[in-house]
Length: 187
Image (tube, rainbow, N blue to C red):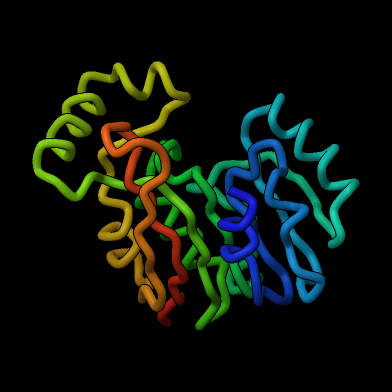
């Protein structure tokens, strides 16, 4: 995953918002062209781990409590945003993307690395059934494996400029495939 994180974050600059920072694993991968990372993590235990990782980062990192769908930042206050293995578990993905669009400056980048709905009809159907049953989200921290993340991203006013599909883990794994890419906030 380290090389994927490096590629996800390479070339970023200015002020960056990271949603669902978890334990802060991305912090070591930010390039020195990033002036500041503001990391939002709602879960207290993970947030404390992220605070520890922030102290070791090469760039300035501030860790805050918060939810992706309720960002307490001024409009157009970030040059870029990062979502890494978190969009499956945000309570309201539509609200999260709308908030990200709001806080990014026009033309600002959203970098993402996420698992998405399966490409095959059978896997996608199984994912939807697991999501609706509540079983998968209950077992895996609120993860919804069958979300159409890319469609929701486009509906929120982002243009996807770069997209790569990556199979992480065995093909039978319910949270495979993944996508990584760059989307731009369209005014």
